[in-house]
Length: 256
Length: 296
Image 1 (spheres, one colour):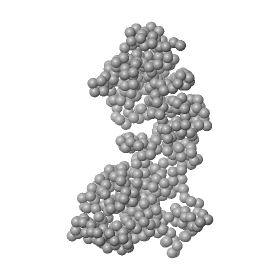
Image 2 (image 1 turned 180 degrees about the horizontal axis):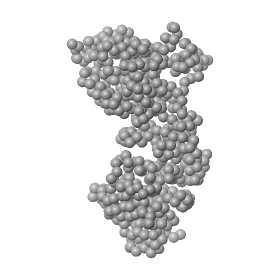
Image 3 (image 1 turned 90 degrees about the vertical axis):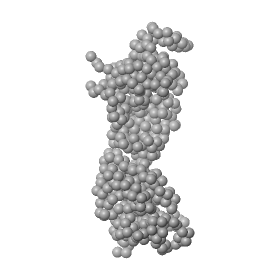
Image 4 (image 1 turned 45 degrees about the vertical axis):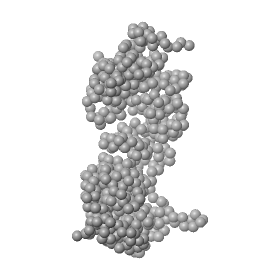
């Protein structure tokens, strides 16, 4: 039997007396793509920030099991935690400008994670960066250009390359196609889907766009007011929603 | 007993050479408690090579950027038996060197020298002398920006965390950018080093030509940043390594010339435009070293 890569039990986080998320339990298996949906303010981002180490939850357990080594995320020291985040996790922000250094060239951005885990060979860093530019469909000749000269879609693809280069075990994506226009969204989604298949990535993806979830996610959870109200295989949840709120969500998707 | 009264009289502000020793100042300008505080910071800095120790920097009678940090460190280390040498860009006779030397002559009445071997305490701006430093010499650097990560990470709280957890990956991003833009590491001064295999340190704006001289030096090296209120240090015989890539090793660059005055080929040179036609002359930046060779 395969054990879960990530196991969350009774996770709660509130901001003063405003609930961020409450008693969340879930697990994630290797190679799985988990979608988190819900309306604005439902606690999606709070949850993903707690899981990725950006926020300290009030209560609960987050246990990663990577290469048969269990890491209790909330019990380790700051230095261990930062090292773990650096080597085993990756975070793709909604706004690529949050995840990139805009005054550093594309190649430097992609190579930064390699350098931070100790790679000290310029030639190797550069050839890997070039390979990843290719993988995310950015013209290789732009490797020395600054991100500010890139379009929105290219920036997002650059951010994805930057995050995937060290083969992280769990990748968090917060609305990765949020700020993009529809045709560019389709291209980025297509890229993410092919990378997920090719590299067998384990991903937690937050979105309010059910189409994104249907396309990418194997499983999904639906959140409302900080709690999980429904979860299961994404096809199942989307085809046969049980909760009133999920039904509303599914029926409010526009069909052109 | 020396008076500890700090009253400054208008008549003391005479400009010119040979300012008289002024008994109205405490020895080396700073009061004893301040010196004690700075010495404690220095001792801590020596215990943790390359670590930036905060200290309560004082207002000095000179503007920030003129070496207020170095002057405070020097003032705290000076004894009456010391012989002081001040260097500004390698030279003993430029503005910064002359005014700081006069400052210490006036406030402490100690011996000064231009000869590196004879000095027991040397304060420098932007150079390490060509003559190797010796045991029992104290070498004080003036530092404008002590934080080597400042250009990559503007938040001080974050840089402190990066130092404490040895998260130095971003430092190599800067060198990567250099190579990808210029084909080699373009950084020519303030070239970052790793001290004692632990802390990344800004060696102050010395040319990278001088970086190897810091490694395993028998002298005590102290760094004072007055505006930024930081002191850091390299104890004697400490490993200091300049950052680089395996395939782009550190290169202590100098101009491909010999000194036009003394003929030395292994010294750091100043490039001087000598006429309106743009003709150049290259001369040693270390005036003491150059004079000695010329007079031989």
